[in-house]
Each structure stands twice: as structure tokens, then as C-alpha cells.
Amino acid sequence: MSEEHYLQIRGLKKAFGTQVVLGGIDMDIPLGGHTTVIGKSGTGKSVLLKCVSGLLAADAGTITAAGSKGAPPCSYMFQQNALFDSMTVEENVGLPLREKGKAGKTEIAERVSDLLEQLDLTAAAKKYPAEISGGMKKRVALARALITNPEIILFDEPTTGLDPQRKFSVFDMIRDYRKRFGFTVLMVSHDVPEVFEISDKIAWLDEGVIKFWGTPEELLSNPPEDLKPFLNPQLSPA
Amino acid sequence: MISKIGRQSIRLVSELGELAGFSAQASVALPKQRHIFEKLSRAIFEIGVRCVPITLIVGLFTGLVLGLQLYYVLAKFSSESLLGQAVALSIILEIGPVFTAIMIVGQAGSALSAEIGIQRNAEQIDALHTMQIDPIGFLVSPRLWAAIIAFPILTTFFDLIGIYGGYLTGVELLGVDPGAYWNRIFEAVSPQNIYNGLIKALAFGIITTLICAFQGYFTHIKADIPGARGVSQTTTRAVVYSSIAILMFDYLITSFQMAK
Image (cartoon, rainbow over all chains, first blue to last red; front, side, top):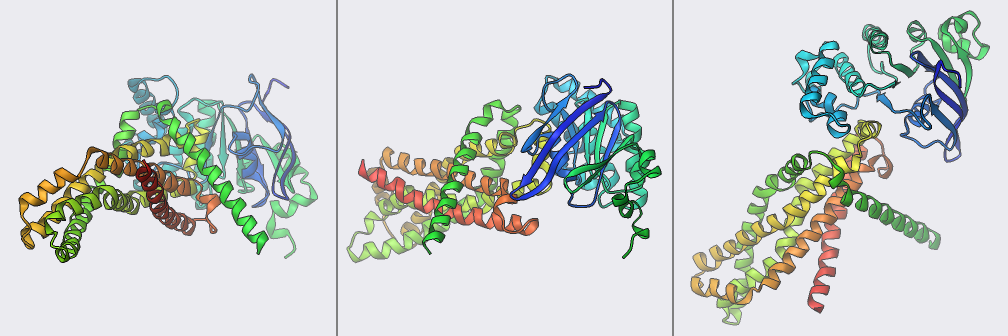
């Protein structure tokens, strides 16, 4: 495996009954980079992410993280944030440390407080998820994903249900915090072309396989024929 | 027809197998949890403390009605003095454990099933997985152990208030001798009777909590429809299955206890 790659995915297959969702995925996720998997709804983007995170068992194939023998220890940001309604913001963020790891009560409180400060969430620390805005919920979910200092964070359509302005602010947030904290990003999204601005690599998932792999510039300069209608739906025939 | 019965039987056996696996996981997961006392206290509050008022109200009215019904039956045989014994044994052995369990299922069991079902739909259970937190240990085990503690205690409350309800009707309203009422109870009710009643309460606590948690936890698989209606469906199933299980196991446990 090349050293610059954090995650190596080889021959990943997943089917539900007779429906093949992933028909053999090969990908090398660059270390510290931002890789976005694009594709139409229902093409298996989220399934790919769930296989990488271990939430779904793949039927075949391997996922290897640099420096480890198996799947990576990763954090996951869900479409709907998956925050616990009955816990405050600081309790949500501290949950992974409270339930796992060796940190004591004081250390957890300090780490949570520091992270909330870095993500401008200090004022919301004692609030419940229902009492904060959608954008803040995203940041809380990101804070919870960051609290364990993960090497990779998986983002499952982080802008679902957001208006264009908020969409851009979520993408900016991901870009800024990736630079600041240095984690690797694997994101699935159908927000094209917005994701090109923050991605280092683009993978186009269609019919269960990766049909394009490269930088956003490569994609835009020479897009595959099949991808053109997806990139620019206005130009495609009705 | 035969193939349909066969399919249903396979489905039932498979579901019972899944429930058994789920139960085994939930039973052993608590010691591996952190902050056990905090989680257990919260669960005891939800299942136990919050159910005290409904248990006391239902227990009191059950005792009142039972006192009234039994008084007129016993009066036909001029045996009104046996009222205390009849009320106490009916409540301790059968009505107390069964009614208490049904009340707790209606209040705490349905809430448990719906809460876990919503957490499943909101991807909170998946989130626990990705944080390497055992969701069954985190969400179900504390509730199971809380039920093991709370069901016998609430049943005891029901028994006591029910017997007092029988006293109010029999003694205060219908004129049975108070000494006879209480004496008959102390003479007739043995520690074995109390033990048998509490064993039932314990069994109902375990069975109903597991059924309710199981239905909620697998709402994405068990429900015919996804989303809120799916949660509503599995919550209803949780209450119905639990109520049936209470009555089935009541019969089974009573058969074993009588055969001794």
C-alpha cells in the first residue's frame, strides 16, 4: 500500500437478497485528504460508508487501514446527526469518552469544554439538541465525532435537508476543521458541484461500481459521458 | 395451507431464537457497562417510581371490587369471616403479579419500546455502534435489571393496597369483623404464598422488558412500515405480546407451583 493512502478498499461487495448494491469497490483513500463519493440516490453510497464503518458486514472484499490489520477506528457523522435527545450538548459530545476509553471525569470535562470552545459551542453546552439550530446540531455531531481524535471521519450526506446557504457553511465547517484537526474524510454526497470545492478526490459510484476516480479538476475537464447528465442536469434531455 | 403454517412456524421459531439471543446479550451486558449505578437508578425511576401511582390506584380499586364480589359469594355460605383470606390469597397469588405486570407494561413497557424504536430510526443505535458502545448493554441491560428489582417491589405495593381495599369494602362498608379479616389473612397466607407471587412478578418483569425492548430494537426489521408508523406498530405489538406472555407464563408458573 502506498504510504500516502490511509484506507485501502479492495473488491468490496454487498447485496441485499438478489439486489446487488456494491459489485466490487476498489478505492484508495488518501491520508489526511477529503474523498467524496458522489452518485444518484439509491446507488449504495451510504451502504459503502456503512460497510467501511463496520455497521454492515460486506459480503466480500477487504478494508485495510494504514498501520492496522483490519477496518479503521473511525468516527461517523450521520445524516440526521443521531444526537441523543435526552442528553445535553456536552453530554452528547462526552459520551464516547464516558462509555469507552480511560479518561477520568475531570479529563473528560476538560476535553469536552476545549472542543466545544473550538467549535463555538460553549454557549450551547447545557442545552438539549431540541433547543439548538440545525447548523449547531451538525457541529455538535462533529464535536462528538472528533472527541476521540479519530484518524478518519465518515460523513453520510451531511447537508441533507439544509438550504443552500447552510449547505455551504457545513462544507466550510468540514474543510476548516479537517485542516485544523488533520483527520481524513470520506464523505458521500449528491451535492454536485458544491462538493468539488472541498474535495481532493471524487469517486463516482454508479451501478455498484466506481466509474470515475480522480480529482475534481480531472472530472470537470474530462467527465465521462454517463456522468454528464448528473453533473449538469439542466443540459440533459428531458 | 400447510406451507403457510410451515412458514409461520419457521418464522415463530426464528423469532424466538432471535429473542433468546437478544435476552442472553442483555442479561450479561450490565457488568461491562460504566456508570452502572447511575444507569440503574435512572431505569428504576422510569420503571419503578413512575409506576407507583398507577399501581396503587389499580391495586386499591381491585381490592375494593374483590372485597365486594367475594363478600356476596361468601355470604351465600355464611362464610363472610373468610373474606380476608380469600382477598389476600387471590391478590398475592394471582391478581397482584398479573395486574401489576400489565400496568407496568402499559406505562413503562410501551415507553421503552417506543423510545428504543425512535432511537433506531434516528440512527442513534448505529451511532452507539460506531462509538464502540454496546447498544444492548447501554440501552437494554439497565432496564432489564431495573425491572428485576422493580416488578417484585411494585407487586408488593399492589398486594398491600389491594388487601387494604378489600378491608375497606368488607369491614368498613359491609360490616365484616376486622379481627376476623386480619386474623384469617395471617393464618392463611404462608411465606411460600408470598414467595410464589413474587417469583411470578420477577418472571413477568424479565419477560415483558425483553419483549418490549426487542420489539423497539428491531423496529426497522419487525415493522411492516418504516418510520413513525413502524414504531407505533412495534410498540402496539410489544404491549400485546407482553400481555399474552404474562397470562401464558402465569398459567405455566402456577402449574409448576401447584405441582410441588
